[in-house]
Length: 84
Image (cartoon, rainbow, N blue to C red; front, side):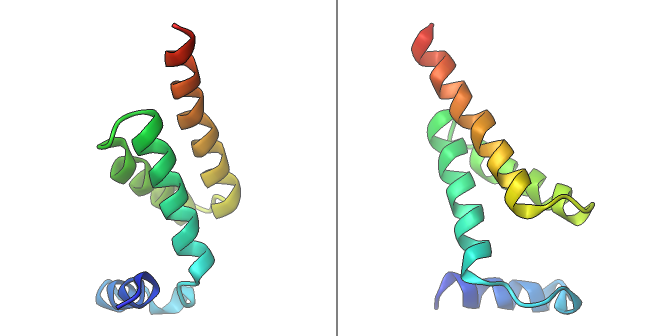
């Protein structure tokens, strides 16, 4: 099973069918953000950060812009730790 297929099963289970299908770009965006948060902040930051992204998108934030802002924030944490 691919992650897109899994996401579609989850979407159906949560009755999110009116929001359109999950695309590979959506999966990649979330996984990239999770990677940045896990590697730059802490592993537990990955699910927390992606959850908060979902809330923001659900409230109308642009998915690409919000994910990019959170990735920058996470990466800045790693940069700040390296400077210390």
